[in-house]
Picture (cartoon, rainbow, N blue to C red):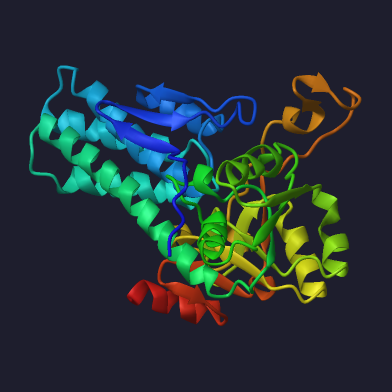
Length: 351
């Protein structure tokens, strides 16, 4: 049974992309219109849109925006195709870790290469494919939610880290999709949300969207998870993913690895919830996943104000990699994958 969220994060409207500006949540809940490709590149880079699945759809929309602009130039069809593929490849570089971005942009490149249409026809085909990917994302997330709900105990308290909810996807969520589907069957299910330093996506975004949908949520700091696990107050962990290697090693928001270690020690099952498009079978292990180094100001400042000495050194990786040995299962739209992940992942792509 699907729970209908009130949130639609990103949507193609006529000739532009409309999205929730996630940089201003929880102070404002507002939409912005992205009208050209470079603007979309910047929106992804600056995290106006965030969350691997939502970034992927944004990338697909961005390719359409680039196509619309190039269609207005005096280009031959061959020149148009060549330049547009360059722009699509450029869009892939807006953020390096989330593989859904590369996947969705490549889907658009495949449309460009396969098209037999004129320039205007290519633009229309890209638009329709972007809308198709957008609609599929919600259906995929609902399937993930329903499979995940099967392993949620009655009355469970679910810990999550960062935001893998409706606001990280088109409108339902991966980790929080599991929560929504479980809550639809059992309204005693509740969530503990890590604040998720340094950008506080858990505090700002996860608590915001769960409160909006009426799902009970308790905010804790990143360092508290082991305390609550030791007290028997956490029944399971479900988080999202930005890239999963062929062996199941998973990159997710920095701090996820710490949660997984604590969960293993306390015998709390730790699950990843992600679509198959997040699995990168071209890499064997998590050691090959590029880790984005983000602005030092994310660590040194809060709301524009310094919180430390301006002489301090800072390292700010945006993600860490949780080894597959710590993961009880990977919840996908094709079911819950279990160890041996090399085998179960390969089988999922053959279904």
